[in-house]
Length: 393
Ligand SMILES: Cc1ncc(COP(=O)(O)O)c(C=O)c1O
Image (cartoon, rainbow, N blue to C red; front, side, top):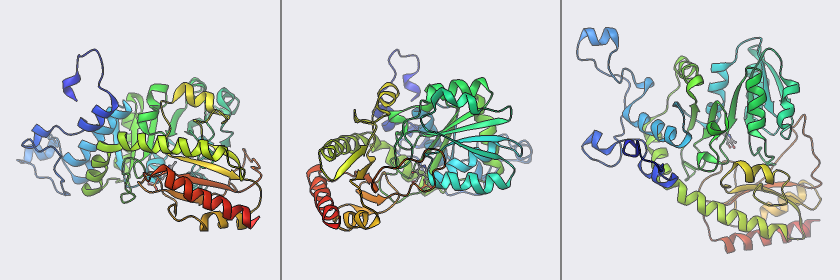
């Protein structure tokens, strides 16, 4: 989006989504970038080869296709640079490996995506990193947990499955005072509804598998850094030999072009369904930060500009039998884990991994991903689920 340089009003996010990444005139005017399948890159002569003095040098270090996606993500995140990795989980593990060493201490929010916890508890611990979890509602209280060797504060807001909101600016201020790098898994909001780097976060992590893909068919992750952290991230990414296939990068860029309108539809339908669920007798709580009833609503309203399509409900008591009756009665909602696609999904979540923020919700917690189906049809489906849950006791 070079053409916006020097203009007073920056382009809106849908304009950025539509035009960021490649310049069509770099490739004969074709609107989409070429899908470059590459390992070897040739050099014109020995001198250039010896100095590696050309834009592309080896397939793992970037191609016109991966650059197009990384540049589009930079435009959305406001980042100095973005690396692409093969999954959202790799987007979590790569920066942690790039920034942490044996003897360091790292703080993780307790409402973290479970495979992030698994990585921290197994590989990071084995490599000599001291891992500690903190309450998602801690805010500036994180200062009490900082140690001289705390190198990373890892955040995810809202939290996985229970959607606690973190006070990111307060956490950033205390973490930076103590010299730590702040990372955020921002998959829920996407950079359309929250730009972590604008709020002081150093590393923004996105499972592009979700909304950027949008079609439940591609796995990919992006990690974007501010100027201060970019070189360390890029070096770590290169050292690990991380790269993504060109077809996947192309598909994610393709997904970005429509992500704004898709997210808008997810947001509207999810909020309408969440409000309807709040009125249902079989539901004791709806865990959606854009609802006024949510304990983190004030933070969401202050910092975020929108809400995506995934939230949870709590059924009024009962156990696994009731949760399964609810899920088995659903016809439109599929039973599956990944989210951000066009189709609705439901899952009975386990909170057994929590160590600090152990809350008893008083009934099964069901996570719902609201897809692009007609809202009334989804409400009808949930009505059947709630009736079956009530019948199961
Ligand atoms: C918050 C969050 N971060 C990261 C991931 C990992 O993404 P992927 O499935 O691409 O590994 C997920 C997947 O569900 C997620 O929910």
